[in-house]
Amino acid sequence: MSAPARPRTVLIVDDHPVYRATVRLLLESAGFEVVGEAADGRAALDLVIRVRPELVLLDVRLPDVDGIDVASRMSRGPEPPAIILISSRSASDYGERLALAPVAGFIPKARLSASAIEALLG
Image (cartoon, rainbow, N blue to C red; front, side):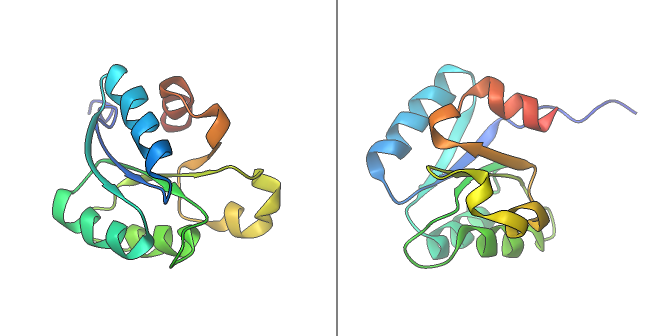
């Protein structure tokens, strides 16, 4: 059996439109296809069902629903995407909740890059 392919389709979830646009450019220049953007958790949960991304970059601090809670809901779907949490805060600010979250990992927003994503996903 061959190894699974690297995720190519991405949903970006962050409440800051300028950051979403920056991440979109970064990912598209690295060969990813951004299939959607969401500014809050409810929109993200709707989009993940409609566009079926292979990867979700998910801000922990959203205006409506906590990103860790959104990740938990997404992970219970029939074909859940890989999820990477992002934040302008340090991973240590989230403590055990982050460690127990059903995600591939965490990347600080300032360090987000295609290589950081690939390092987490193998």
